[in-house]
Amino acid sequence: MKPARCVVTRSPSQNVGVVCCPWLQAEPIEHESITERWFLLVAVLLPRLRRIVHQPFRLELPCAEDGASEVTYVPDFSLEFESGKRGVVEVKPEKFLPKHRAKLAAAAEALRAQGQTFFVVTDKDLRSTLSMPDAVQIRRIAKMQCSDEEVERTLAVLSDSPGFLTAGELSTRAGVGLHVVAWLVSRARIGTKGPGIVKDATLVIDLAKEEGCHAALSVGRWFATAPW
Image 1 (cartoon, one colour):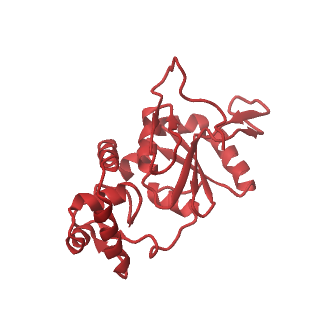
Image 2 (cartoon, rainbow, N blue to C red):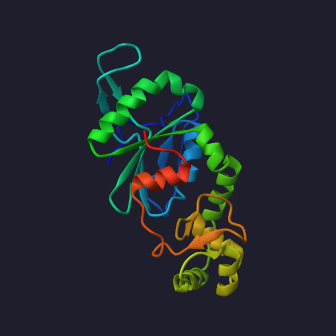
Image 3 (spheres, helix red, strand yellow):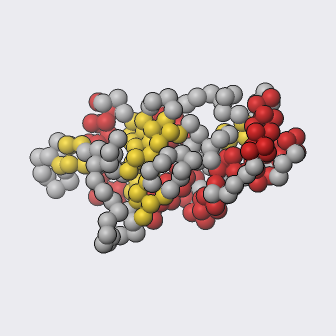
């Protein structure tokens, strides 16, 4: 899917940039604000995520806040999952929601008619999900390298477990440091109850044993927000 418009330009007027996750996808993901970057750092931790597309498509909506008969709307991101399902996301500071509520409600209705699920994730949602410093720390872990032998041994131990293990127990059984478990979580190779810094008591599970979720449930659970 080709983005509907380019976010990063030669003379950006906002806090634009890219998030590169080569373990997830080859192409970088563009963002045009600090809040969008924050969202991306949390979103890439989603299990069974296949791809994130920025500014994915255009929607012609029948109404707008200014009274115009039609408005073009471009959502911020599309999250595509291994199941083939997709969640469409708008990232918006909480204080701007009242101004854009009518347009976002119209977008949600149009996307529902297409069988797609629409989410609005605010800075308030992000604060309650994972702090920016913690998200940055997890990204640093994801950019580290772990030995293939330690990774395979850890995954094998978790695969033999009937359900959740604590990260500490997994690292002990596999004979690896806790950082290896944290690395697997940071690259969404194993499942957790939600995004966060991996500690000894963090519950982890083999993705093959975790019940697969519809994209809407995955995004809603991860960011503790409901579809529009």
